[in-house]
Length: 369
Image (cartoon, rainbow, N blue to C red; front, side):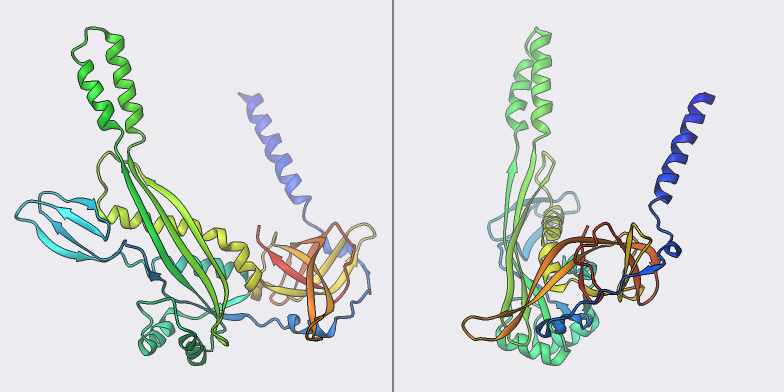
């Protein structure tokens, strides 16, 4: 027992030593590198570290999964799946009520969290959104007209709107055990124990596949409120299954639909990063003679944490061959940087294994892990 305790302590010690060895000692980096970067004129606008103001507007439910009449009995509740909605079966004492899945805003918190993780947005508050909704009557529609989008921007000061629609909800009840149940009942009259055991096993396995398969398609859009134009549009879909040999209740179906959409939303992370990611730039470079660290103008106020990853960007003037307009061309380099523990409110030190192209005033982009 002592041997295993000693071995455990050694493993823990090695782990902490290996982790601590990854931290740099900033005092050893005493040599400055004064290489500066001449920022192309057309790219200087990307150095303004102003977060974009974004609002997430209620989605439109274009699917057949919507408001429904259900009958609720004090004894039982059984929901069936209809083409236009959900209907309930009960005895004559059942009471009818209208239920609403409220898909329009069910997954807005998930979208807002993904946007906040980009580091480059300020979200328009839900309380302020309610005031604008009351004036423009947007509660039941996320697919706004160009005029409504522009008007929304003028009233709120928002630059971009994230919205979209629930396009379809497909559901199918699979009851495989009803077939194997007949086999199980028939085997009960057999004197062969192996036949009975095999039938029971088949019934057990088939029941594991019983349930309701749900497939939801959702379109997410990013709108520019200055022009009313759609900047980005993509349909996402996800499959989920309610495992049960009984038909699910309306609440179970509604929850599964919402879960399906929330499960699919993280696939948009890279697209959101493309439009809303946080940019910064290098303000200082130091070396200890072998390794390099770079200081950036991003810090705690920008949500920077130890271990955050960044990519060094390459900028260049690009002349449009048709209009002759000079535009900024941006591309990623192979130089990666990682935030160290040396972070204060308005700056932080990043470590890198690649000094290639690293210069003061070079632009960097925060990446998702």
